[in-house]
Image (cartoon, rainbow, N blue to C red; front, side, top):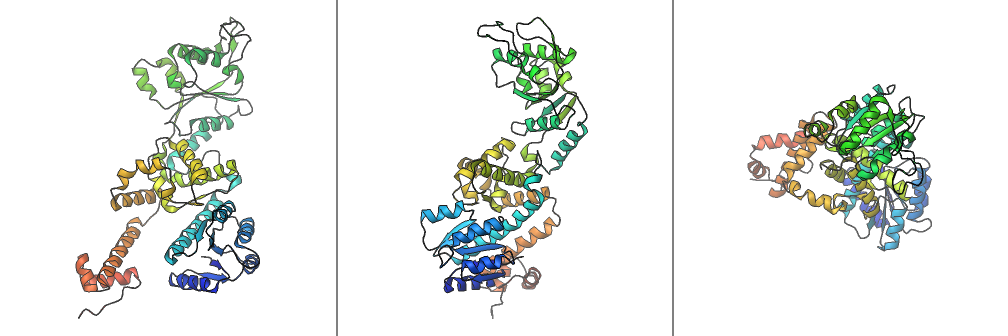
Amino acid sequence: MKPVWIIDDDRSIRWVFEKALTREAIEFKVFSSAKEALDALDREVPQVIVSDIRMPGESGLDLLQQAKVRHPNIPVIIMTAHSDLESAVTAFQGGAYEYLPKPFDVDHAVELIRRAMDESVRQLAVSDDVGEASVPEILGQAVAMQEVFRAIGRLSLSHATVLINGESGTGKELVASALHRHSPRASRPFIAINTAAIPKELLESELFGHERGAFTGAQNMRRGRFEQAEGGTLFLDEIGDMPQELQTRLLRVLSDGNFYRVGGHQPLRANVRVIAATHQDLEARVQQGLFREDLFHRLNVIRLRLPALRERREDIPLLIQHFMQKSARDLGVEPKRMSEAALKYISAQDLPGNVRQLENICHWLTVMAPAANIEVKDLPPEMRAVTTASTSKGWVAELATEAELRLHRGETSIMTELTQQFETILIRKALDHTGGRRIEAAQLLGLGRNTLTRKIQELQIDGARTVDEA
């Protein structure tokens, strides 16, 4: 692990950090000026920078600006005795990880540094795995998404009709677009239409076009979506909501490749690949008489099912990273960062709006979150309100969430690691409660003294001193 840099012209502040970081076994270097640190930055790269904002010569903001140019992924914590809005805004606009007003609590400062160190490691991993130039058109590492990617690959030379099933917000149009881009029709148009979003009386004209004078207001001939997509792909979203009479016309196009404009008498030939999508159970709608069975079989040549986001929770951190960067680029601001606690919190939610909802959350956070580092308390109020019932279950629910996330990430030795953490916390708290008296702590924990001593040694619990209990 690289060292943490502390930059402050106040010797007493440097001394406080030296003692605190030594106690926490965190490697560090101290500098008395921004210039000294910037000179060192030419030779080495720190894990985290903690800098005062006002110093003789170059300021902490000057240091922040130059550090971000040279090494944009280094978290920089700006501290100042001048707790004013202008300094905070300037620091965050410059890409500061966090803003620490003086005087500060030392334990809080150390905790902030640890979070910044974790963020530095995560940013490095993301920059290695997901560089800007290598971001795929659809993000996903989960097994269910890999199946979708393989299906797109297998269909790359096909002109077959495809039916995409998936809940709202799962990315059905993205998959349809990818199918088009990787098909022999890629050089021709990709035309998308949401059949549920267009009034019933206008949908026929939208799909097939109309002749001049076909109805009141039709002053000119208009080409429909089938003609616009000639030689390419027509994506019909929410096909399950298509009116019955238009289902008949669509079936005719799929059957013989011909159609008529509204008010027209000359048949037109459609050279179009149709990709349809729905969030509904089309088989059930067929049984209910709401969808034509023959049209269903025409559409259901190749079926792809997109997983809901709750079925691919391991992809949520990757998607958040992508959407936070995208929102920042769109708004022309520095991207904010999600703490590990906030990532776990969001990953544990069901998110009924799926990927679309997650993207909206990231955009909201880019605009509304008060700090550069986003904590659970910064999440949208409605998200925290919805989960009040589940979080009230306490540590058992948190343990279940942690176990699920680790399993999704494919980690091993989960039982050993979590058990060690669990026992370490219980033993430390029991010893704190008894003032270090091991016999009393062992009785409270339901352990023998020898067992407690052995666990203290195995778990390497610091500060577990033996108190004379005679």
